[in-house]
Image (cartoon, rainbow over the protein chains, first blue to last red):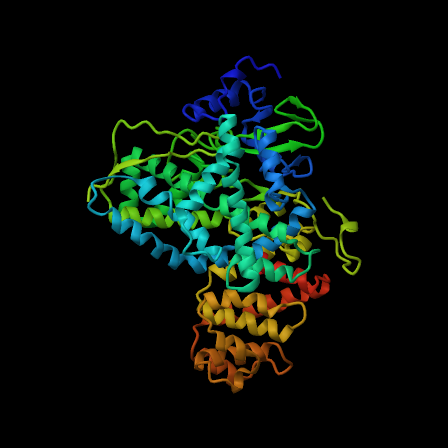
Length: 407
Length: 194
């Protein structure tokens, strides 16, 4: 489609994203971005239909680098046995169901609920350390590390350095979803490999010492049978969780807290009545999704909002835009924790790829807000700070979030 | 999207393999996923009759979330019903829910022979006697009824009976629709009270 303004689309830069989406939904809802070689889809209805039709819209590019890896990096990774397999996030039916079914026998609400008490206790050292500090960066003080601690617990690695996991996550994010200089991409290779090898190290250990954790569970399901799961597939499932399980929650926490503190009355409502926190979490997920866009590929020619899109087109589906679509939400551009239609948001996707960790993220976000509102009811945003957002096509969250604790 | 040929030959029912096109069935699938589970084999089997899937799921959720019966007692009743009905109703996949509700490992381990076990208190014994009665030709004696009435209020008795009946029915569904052991496990994972 001829869209004269598509060059105004800044896929890696998030200041102004929502203003751009609003304009695009009206005038140019589906357009091609030569910058990234993706078709950009912005309306709720189109995106929902795409997510619900995995036969027409393949997920096989969901985790692929947006900019293909430089040859030198590919050669390096291949020579070191870096071979992630397509598992539940990026394979299509009917194989997809096989992996998803296995993963969800462990990663389900029963497991998450059973961990909730422990997860609450895990915030305490962070909260205690913040007390009396006056002004802190909440990302640094809580939201950066905490979700990584939870994921390490599920993986049976509670003592592993959460900072290291975060560094690996950021490195992978920049390489796959970001746009960084060629030389930086090549020099990022060894750490990407170290991240992949960490998943292997966990598996090797659990083969000798099975415990009550996700890797041991997967090995148990495999039972030595490659037709059920191969070891590289298990490694890929763990590698997926090691990234998706915390990067997104860190960003979501920052995003939600910013929106609440920008509207003091809504923060105060949570202080007065913590039972409103789950609704605030949900509205935060809708209004300021940490996954601003996800990816699909067409398996046949399709029409989206009247725009003909060819077969094998790569699609960038803007979940953040869908969540602000006035055709789907009443007064979509207003943040309101009491709205009733919040839960239709697409931040966790929809259909058979619906985010497995979504219910876990909800619990973590709820716990963080419960602890923060209880410990620092008078917390305020430090005024006149410009938020520096993650630079990537898919992920959006503040790198820093300065608050006055007021305790 | 319905694909008979994708199913194993020993399964005569026509289960849904992809996403439901029917809005009612689709809404139920969304609810299940939103709640942190995956639609299981039984949901997929029922999805070919969307209204039935919706009704079945709503009853399951009501029995799970909107009843006043102590959750541990409810889980014990579910485990015991599964044990009595046997076969397609895999006991072991239910133990996680039971443990979360406060059922002890000893209780789970000795449930098959609960009358000889000292792991159950008087209320639990009353509930198990009642459930056992429902699952046998003896039904529920006046004495059993009196025992339960002394410990549960009328609403709880209705709920207990409905839970036991629902899970016996789910076992029949799994059997009648030829959901294999593996699929039945997945359906329990997928739906809690499916």
